[in-house]
Amino acid sequence: MANQETALFVWEGLDRNGSRTRGEISSRSEITARTELRRQGIRVVKIKKKPKPLFSGPRQKITPKHIAVFSRQLATMLSAGVPLVQAFDIVGRGHDNPAMQDLLMSIKADVEAGTTLADALSKHPVHFDELFCNLVRAGEQAGVLETLLHKVADYKEKTESLKGKIKKALAYPIAVVVVAVIVTSILLIFVVPTFEDLFKSFGADLPAFTQMVINLSRWLRDWWYVVFGSLGVAAAAFVKARQRSPAFNHLLDRLALGLPVVGAILRKAAVARFARTLSTMSAAGVPLVEALQSVAGATGNIIYGEAVMRMREDVSTGQQLQMSMRQANLFPNMVMQMVAIGEESGALDSMLSKVADFYEEEVDNAVDSLSSLLEPLIMVVLGVLIGGLVIAMYLPIFKLGSVV
Image 1 (cartoon, rainbow, N blue to C red):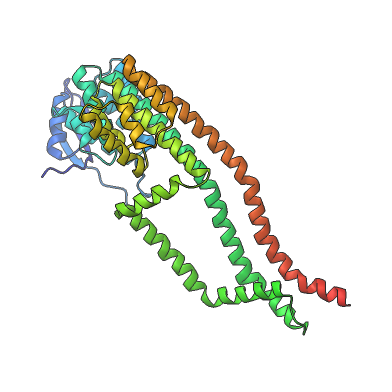
Image 2: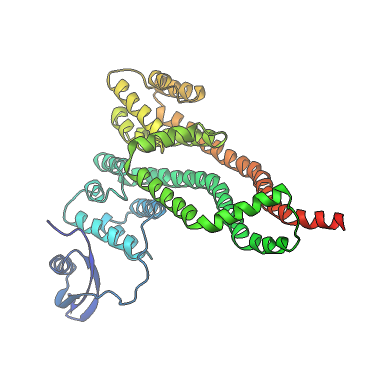
C-alpha cells in the first residue's frame, strides 16, 4: 500500500541549459520526486530526504478555516487561468502551515498522476467532507470547476462564520462559570481558614451563615482531591461519550435544543446550515436526493440530521420537499413557504439562499442579545458568590463590634 504521507527532498541537478541548480521538492517518495524533476527538464545529480529539525515546535493542525481559505485561493487562481497543478503548487508552497503544505502537495501529486480532483480530495476525508467532494465532482463533470469552487469557498466561509457565532454564544458564560468556580475554591481553601483561626480567638458562637461557610471550607480542604478528581473524570467521560456514543450525542443535542435562549439560537443555526448547504448543492446541479444525504451531516445537530434523512427517503419516493419538511415539525413556517415557492418556480437554490441569509443574521442578532442579557446576570452571580463569602467572613467581626 502506497504511503500517503509526503516528505521534503533536497536535490541538485542540471537544467535544460546544462546549468547547475538546486532546490527542494515535496513528494511521497524519492522515485516520484525524480520523476517530477525529470518532467520539469532537470537531470538529477543528487537527491536526499531533508532531515527534520531536531528541536521543532508542535506541529500545527489543519483547521476548517485553513480549508476555507484554500478553497477561495484555488477558485481565484483557476478563474485567472492558472492550471490546476500549478495552482496547487503556488498555494501549497506559499502556506505557512507545514501540515497544510504536505496535504496540498499530496493532492497535487495525485492530480499529476491523473486522478480527478474530487477523488484526490476524497482521500483526505478528515479535511474534505462528502459535501465538498461532491461539489467539486459536479464542477469537474460540468466543466465549471472554478465556479463551483467559488460556491464551495462561499459556503465554507459562511459556515465558519456561523460556527464562530455559536462558539461566541456558548464560550463566554462557560468561561465565566469556570472562573467563578476557581475563584470560589481558592477563597474556600486558602482564605477562609485564615479567618477561621481568627474566629477561634473570639471564644463566641459564630453566626449560622459563617459557620456554614467554614464547614464547607473544611470539607473542601479534606476532600479536594475527590472533588477535583471527580470533575476530571466526569470531563473525560463526557469527551469519550461525545466521541463514541451516538445515543449520548442524540440525548445531548435534544437537550440542547430545549434550553431557554440557547436552544433557540441552536435551532436557527441548524436551519441556516440546512438552507445554506442545500442551496449550494442545488445551485451546483446536484440531484435533490443526493444533496440531502450531504445536508444531513452539515446541520450540526443529530435531531435535524435524522429529520433530513427521513426527508430524503420521502423525496426519493416522489414527495415534495416542503411536504416532507412539514412532517418533520422542526422547520419554521416561513422556511417551508419559501421552499414551496422555490419548488414551484424552479428557483429552490435562490430561495434557500435567502433563507440562509435571514437565519444567519438572526443567529448574529440572537448572539448579541444573549451576550447583553448574560453580562448583568453573570455579574449578579459572581457578586452573590464572592460577596456572600466576604459577608460570611465579616459577620462575626460586625457582631463583636456591636457587643463592644
